[in-house]
Length: 110
Length: 113
Image 1: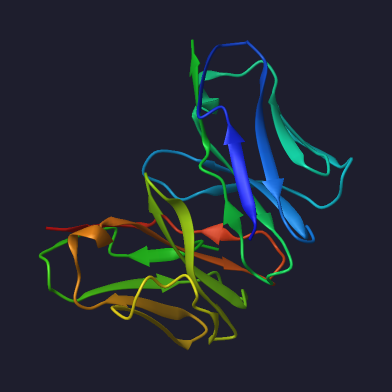
Image 2 (image 1 turned 180 degrees about the vertical axis):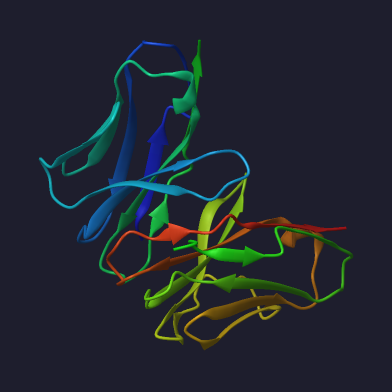
């Protein structure tokens, strides 16, 4: 059974204070690892897909990386508008099925 | 494109009543997914469809839950009878293929009293 563990559960940063979120996973045959952002009262918003170890993707202040056992979401010089819950999900050999982690609640203070 | 559309956005009902949630996927997407999100269990896949055909319903909690997709632009998730433990946010998502990113709707917040 595919499993995803995200840490920390919550992270509080000052504006401009860079940090990283962790996503550890166990999956049989990784087909893709997905990062989503979820704002309160809204649906998850797609950020990145990573397919193989060593792959990196960037979008504004966010950079996602992937190893064989975990993924990191690096946030450089965050702003208050980066505050949200960040969800990680994996897709294994079960076509179409995503298994989500519990998420990391990020709060960035001005 | 307007994105995935869900209705209603909020639903409050009493235990034992029938509840129907609705979803319109993004045009051209062949896959449609129904998820449930709670604080305790996070985001869980309930069922998904490919070209209007149910493929995997192993996440459906019990026989009180049913889902249909009569055409490519409409799907329903029905709970009959509803129970307080069904209270959650229900999301619909769609994707172009089974291995692409999924795009989520705004969700329906269901409260069963």
